[in-house]
Image 1: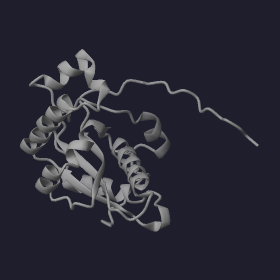
Image 2: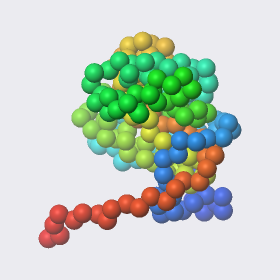
Image 3: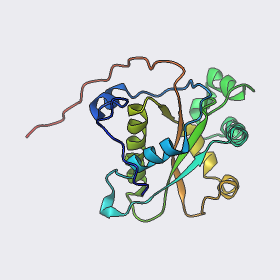
Image 4: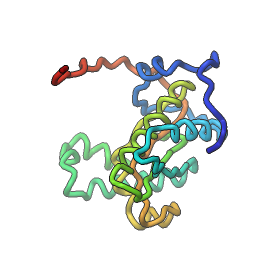
Length: 200
């Protein structure tokens, strides 16, 4: 795609195994904006993901305008608060957070990457999640932080925002990922051991 491969042997990057174990969701960023060149490198890593029937259904949208990110955040917050299909938001603490004027659903990250799917087959969404994981691991390898913002998916797929962002009607936003330089170290989070149902 962009022919800017990530060099795993570079001293300023983590190995793939290190990135897998160190990648964690970060919600606190410095104001430093990730360069266009770096984002293109990360997207090139993303499209190396497995893809069913080699359909490569992914398309991407990069948003770095802070005014636009704020507008989307406010729109999503309003929709979530009014939603009757999100039982999580019935929690008073969660409701208070989403109604707070200083809360940004994107945690003031300087960049938002949308991984979108063209309607080419039943595995298009799965392919996009695989691409998203590649993107996040590559970002971690370069010392950047990411977090998937699931609460934004519905709002980004509304006709109003699709039109505003130039997303075709038949294309779906699957994975919104915030990206930036972390303002804090990721806390170590223990994972459960893999549950093996059978080994035959």
